[in-house]
Length: 181
Image (cartoon, rainbow, N blue to C red):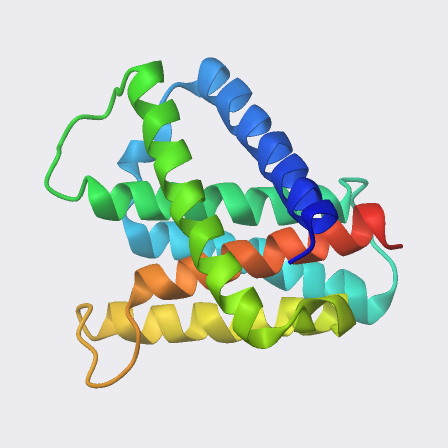
């Protein structure tokens, strides 16, 4: 990945983190009440809306589609945090702890993206936004299947790997929307 694209990736991440932390100041960590399958469904709602808007080429709610991409990224981070804290019953987490968890999760997502991007050679740049949406819906279907199997897989990646891929697809889509229209 070129330095210019890494800077764009980081700008998208900074924007998502900023929104996440501002919402946390408004709502606290109320998302701690959500079980991971509920988060999966919330991400599904956002991805399905993006697919509907993309297919119909129109929308009746004035929210920008970019906001749905940001929501997908942040809900995936929430899911990854919830998986990390699965045996922790606290609802109210302090700000510094959440910042640290967010940063750890997004850094591991970026590290994996850099490795994969090396092997795939920037293929994401030639992809359509509609393909990112469809791939996210496939990943969500896989996550739901794994959740329905109590997290057990025979040969496939687990839910965390799928959330990570969804985050990267969403960041790539936002880079394309914002910097390569």
